[in-house]
Image 1 (spheres, one colour):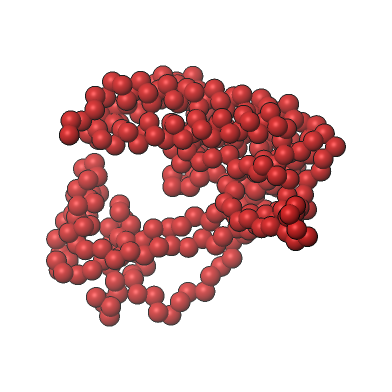
Image 2 (tube, one colour):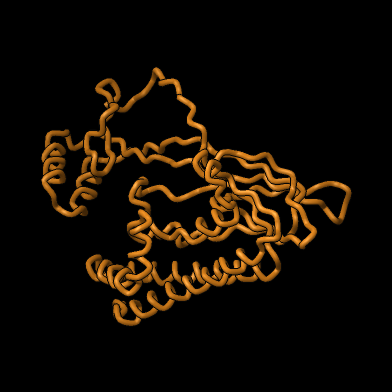
Length: 298
């Protein structure tokens, strides 16, 4: 099967990214026009001290497509909130989500190209959006965060009776992996002194020894939403992930549903160390987050 030319994929990617930015502008303008409608967005102590406008914070979160220099590159910005929206704003949100899906498909199409060619296309995207990228860098942002670009604006078509926010706990996933698989992962990385050192360390491990690859799971925000059941006397529930403030339909005289304010970030609860930990504390191959099992479990 022939590999598609990079030229049409490059043009499609740039066009769809520009479409996404345009849809975001239209949507955020609509959110700003809804200023008379109530909203609640969780704020930090510093934001409370400066009385940051909650609707303005929501707009900043909706626009956040870029990594921040100060955050872990695997993290995405998350903040609980409820934003009252007019029908026009909800229509703009739907258009924005469609543009996000089309941009994602354009990025995934690059996977059929060679790695160097695909990287070149992404660099071209950043260069063409240099005014945007430069402005974001001045605000502490670095490069495009694809997860934040892909994720939908959470929205509801029906006004809910109640929204209950819950932060999931941070954890980790441990996956058994072979020495050969670990070597392949290292060989896929750009060669550096650290990678060469880790490849050398791997030669000292028996080929049949199993290793443990550890992946951190960042906390995520969920909403338990309760709706009135118009067909009966009861209620209907829905559980959804809401990394961004959720948009709800409101009229001028409307009010927010019942909710309990929660912190903008999960409260850190120290966890007791388990007595049966099987993997070593320090990573054996830090570049790919691979640990050895303790001697008793090898």
